[in-house]
Length: 120
Image 1 (spheres, rainbow, N blue to C red):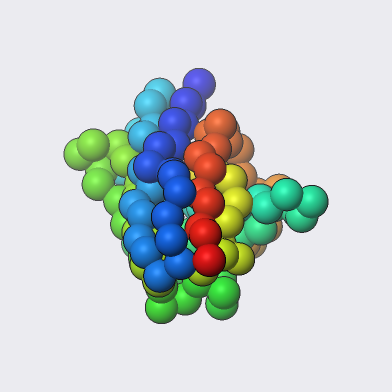
Image 2: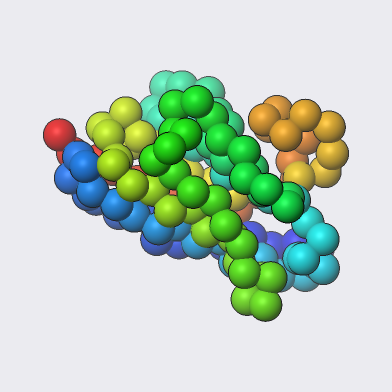
């Protein structure tokens, strides 16, 4: 059984930064590709970033967000800079199971999410 716990969300002004963390347990983390997704009120969950040996990003966050991992700590991070009000959402991390990395159906063991709110 894999457990994922996100943290680091909060309220920040436009242009500010936050770093989200996703702590994993119950699996050989170093071999797991991981993803970050987000869901805003009334919208579908959308892909944000993915990491295996490299990082891949949604166009909407490219150049502002950076995904990284610390295998010794079994943790994946999402550094979010130059935040915009449209980045407001609940952010989730998940373990990739294979296939297309930006498809939510190809992930398992979702965390509970962490709220990010960006004020204008």
